Length: 243
Image (cartoon, rainbow, N blue to C red; front, side, top):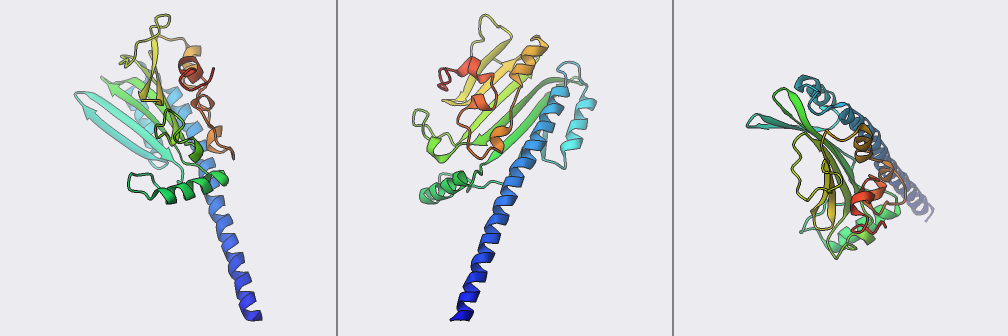
């Protein structure tokens, strides 16, 4: 009986150590992504639309090639470049074929442990030797209890983009008082996008690209996009219930 009890004690201790190690790795991954996200945003801020040369911008891609995923494609003289970085997902990848009960269980466990998915991406376009647009996107997982709060739509994460472009393609009417900027949802009550032109002042540009990264690492989840990019309050206060 004693050997069995001793074996069970060791097995339990090993399981606890394994769980603590797993949680530590996942939490460390979140902090590492936060650190990289801050550096990546700083690099995007350093690019100047209509001024930074293609050669200068490509140095950013070379630097991030071993730190994230880099994508580049060209069409009709316009080249698009992107850098993507994400943490180790503590949740099962979502798909229409994932067992709902398993998704519920793993998601609730992740929420209880303060773990969540997160992704950041920076992107820019070049044409005729200069940068013609740039942008940044941040996505952070929502707690399971928030997934269907927006008109019943499936929204498992907070995701927001802010883009500066010399030729902004407004997909919503710009504010008449601010013709050089506009905002819209990319889909339903999901994914706010802010767009602005280089004509805006430096202070406005800074506000519209003032991404925060605390939602990636805080033990308790964030619940709205305003906690990631405060400028969303200006454009989406009513839709996101921020007023």
